[in-house]
Length: 297
Image (cartoon, rainbow, N blue to C red; front, side):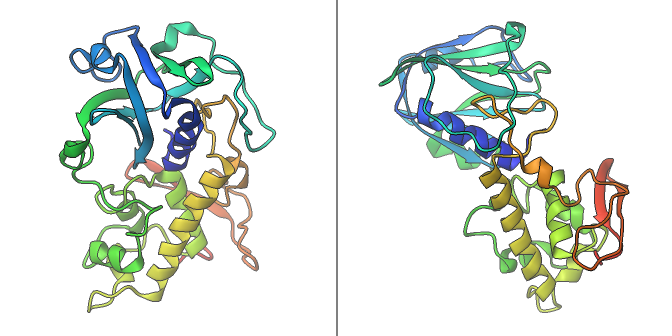
């Protein structure tokens, strides 16, 4: 499933096309994705102008004039592509894959009028685990998808004191606590593994062990907080890691996956300078965790 950096990459790829554009038609080629579309969804988007594209955790937010917001989630295999005259965009990396041409999985088509001419933004989703919803911007914080989300790992709210308040007294393994969206929004399996490796912390260590009795963050938690922010920033800058079905909006591959230090590197040497350990894999809550037992304590 695409993680936060991948969703942010898609947002940045779509923004130059969609922001300021007029949606002439939202064509729905089936009645549902993971969930049914909202009642009169297509009619609600007709002749509406896109104000901005945002993101909250792993959700894309398409703000429309009049205060409505389209909420889009990519699920496991969802992707957007832009059709129309070539855009002057520059994609990072030398790795490319063709856009999906299997129209059987083109489930939503936004027909746009832009200053550069007509464009089509196509949502393709072979497995249909993604979904779209419509809400009022003023009600978004109370929406079921967002009301319990923690701080963004890219924002100023996330610091060691914030995490210490969440972790204090917790007897939960550190990895599970980081994956809990009520603590930090948008962190997924891949980047949690990467951040823990950078911070030299074991995924099995108890979350509460990084907080003092007085509720203050220990030095290790300060290092972990910085590692989280850095690994997410690096992934976004690189264009997002491309795993399985995920592609960028312009069809190109991101390449952060090629610089993973620990994820999916079982039995390979640890890349920590001076460490002689080997990357191992354990299963936590049904999910693979990659770590180095020699330097992650």
